[in-house]
Amino acid sequence: MSQINRSAQQLLAPIISNKKVGQYHQIIVNVGDLASNCKPGNFVAINVGGDTSSMILRRAFAISRVSVSATFGGTMELIVAPHGQGSKWLCAQGEGVVLDIVAPLGTAFGIPTEAVSVLLVGGGYGSAPLFGLAEVLNARGCRVDMLLGASTASKIYAPMEGKRAVNSIRIYTEDGTMGQMGRVTDPIPEIINDLDVAVVYSCGPMAMLSAITKITDSLSVVHQCAVEEAMACGIGVCMTCVLPVRNDDGSVAMLRSCIDGPVMDGSKVQWSQVGQQL
Amino acid sequence: MESGWAAAMSSLDFSTTIGNTWFPAPTFTASGCASSGRELAQFFPLRDMGGVVTKSVMSKVRNGRPTPRMAETPSGMLNSIGLQGPGIDAFIAKDIPYLVEQKARIIVSIAGETAEEYSTLARKLRTVSGISAIEVNISCPNVENRGLVFACDPEASRRVIDGVRRTIGGELPIIAKLSPDVTDLVSIARGVVDAGADGLALINTVLGMVINVDTMRPHLGGKTGGLSGPAIRPIAVRAVYQVHAALPNVPILGMGGVSSGKDALEMILAGASGVSIGTASFGNPTAIMKIQNELKQLLLDRGFTSLKQAIGYAHRPESENIHE
Image 1: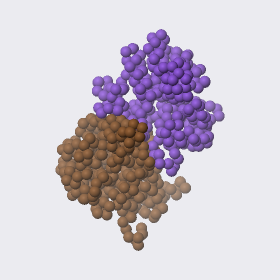
Image 2: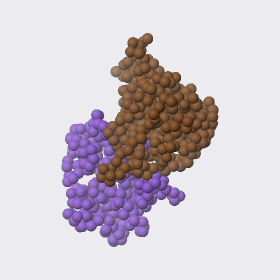
Image 3: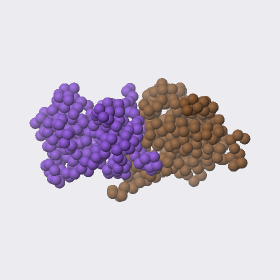
Image 4: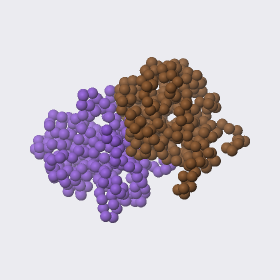
C-alpha cells in the first residue's frame, strides 16, 4: 500500500508577495525544494491567526501554481478569497511574514498520456488551480479550452498570464456583468461534441461539479473534479471531510476528500447523497 | 547545547506504566484523532511516542454520520463523525500489522452498541499479538441514541467493563474511556475500576451544538457534536484531579485540549500517568513530538528525575517539595 501523505512536509515558509486581484488575494510563498513535489490539484494546509489565536485548525487552500525562479527558488502561489476569519487573517499578512504550512497534500489531477483535447471548467476562484493545470496539459501537447463562471464579474478569477496556455477562454456570469449571461455548464455538451473533448477537469462549488457530472455521465468523457469539503486536519486523521463515493463493487463508502481527494472521479461521487445518512 | 540536552535527557526517566504495561514515554494519540496511525507516520516515526491509541473500532463497517461533521469554535471544535470505521476484522487484518511493522505500541480502542458487542470485540482481540492495552470507549457522544452512552450510567458502564474483563482474562490492561458529561464522575470511575478496569481515559469530548444563523438550523449533520480542543482543557484537568484524588492508584490517561508541554504537565500534576493528544494533531501533525520534548524539559526544569515523581504532584500539601 502506498504511504498516505507521502510527499507532505511541514515547513516555515515566508510570504514573498501579497497582492489584491479583484475580490481575491494572490499570495506567493517561498517553499524551496518543496515546490517540485507539488502537482496541479494538490493543496496546502496553513496555520492561521498566529501563536495566540483561538483558531486552532489549519485552513486548506488549493495550490494554484508553483514555479522555480533564480531570485526566490521554489515558490507557491495561492489565490485566497477573504471569506472567513482564517482567510481574512491570511490575506492581511504582508511580505516577510512566515507561515507554518503543510504541503503538498491530497490527490492531483491525472494528466493524459496522449495529446487529447481537454476542457477546464472553473467556478469562482476555483479557476485558480486550473491555470497551473493548463500549463502542464499544454506542455503535454493537449488542446486546452477553458470555461469560467461566477455569479458576477468581480468573482471571476482570470489572470492575463494564465491565458497563454489555453486555446480559448469563455466566461459566464449569472448577472451578465462579464462575458455571456448564463451558467458555465450551459455550453459544455456542445464543446465536448465540437472539440472531441476526452477529459473535463473542474474545480468550483459542489453544485457545479454535480451538474458537470450529469452531463459527462451520458457521454464517454472522463470528469476529474476537485471537491471542496470542510476539513479540520487536511491529513486524513479527523474524518470530517468525507464524501459518498461508489466503490468498484457498487457499494458506497464515505471517503476523505483530503487524502482520497480533492481530485476525484466525478462519475463515482454520489452527489445526491452528499449530506445524507448512508 | 547539544551535548547538554542529551545529558539532561539521559537523567530523566520518562517512562510510565498503565496496568502491567510499560511505555517508554507518556505521550499517546487520542482515540478518533489519529485514525490508525498511518497518516501521521509521514511526519514522525510512530515508535517515537508512547503509543498509538487507534480510532474506536466496532464489529462491522460503519459509515458514520452525514456531513457537515465539523464546526470550529473558539479554541476548539465540534465533531460529529459517528464512529465511521472499517469494522474489527479489516482492522485486525490491515491496521494492526502495519503498526506492528512500525514498532509502535498499540492501544486498541473498541466501541459497541451493546455490552455484548464489546465482549465480542474483546474476544477477537484476545489472540492478536502486538497489542499493549485495550481502551473501552463507553463515552462516544456521536451515537444516534444518547441512551447508548454507557458512561452516563454507572450500571451500564460496569456491565460493559465486566463483560470485557471476563472475555479478555487478565492478559491485557483495560482502559475505560469516560465522559465528563455526568453528575458524579468519581462514582462512575469507581464502578468501572471495581468491574475490572486497570486504567481510565479522561475525558471524551463534551457534548455541544452550533446553530448556523444563516440557515437558522443546527450546523452539524448530526445536530450535536463533541467539543474538543483547548476550550475543554480545564474540564479535563478537573476530571483527572477529582478522580485521582479518589482513586490514587488507578492510572489515568489524561486528555482534553493538550497542545503544549505545559498542558501535558498540568495533566500529569493533576494525576495523569500519561497524556493523549487529539485535536492538537489536527492543527499540527508534529504536535505530539513537540509536546513530548517540551514536557521532558519542563520536568527537568522542576528538578524531577522521573515522570512518575510528577504524577499527582498537585495533590501534595504545599509544604512538600520534590526532594523530600
